Length: 88
Image (cartoon, rainbow, N blue to C red; front, side, top):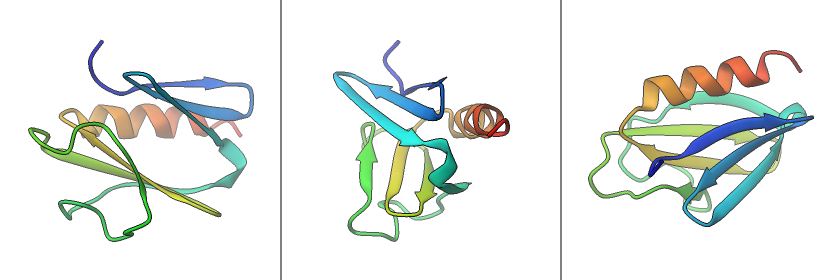
């Protein structure tokens, strides 16, 4: 799969894209939302995915970091993340 893969392992949300693997503690996630801006509001955000050729951006805000996911299927990724973190 070429897009961003989202899964859960124990108490961590795992984001996999190409050779990158990001682990986010579920307890630290404060918000998952669509980002209406092109490059995100937080200049220090960790960007995952290809910014060019994508129509959707999903932002994950935690206690310490912000993650910005560039994707073409934002709604399904957002719903998947929300489902995976619902059972904290």
